[in-house]
Amino acid sequence: MTSVKNSYETVVVFSLKNGEEAAKSMIEKFKEIIEKNAELESIDEWGKRKLAYMINKESEGYYVLFNFKSGSEFPAELDRIYKITDGILRTIIVKKES
Image: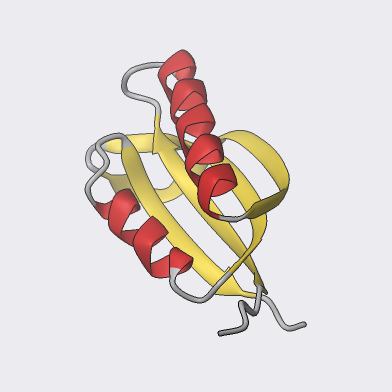
């Protein structure tokens, strides 16, 4: 079985209701998860931004873009982890064209 690696990017909007430090510790947590399961290429912290609309009574979120390469199974697992993690407002995982 050959392990083909695809390029992905994922944008995560972290909640700021527990402060920016809590958001930063979540970034570290996901950085470790991605590094353990994939090849992390870059992290781009866009920082605190106003949301287009209220999500869970919050008007701001902390935006982070992760770029990584992995096999095709990992993005589904990452999405599952996002869904069960408190403190995440929105996520998207996109496969980039090679």
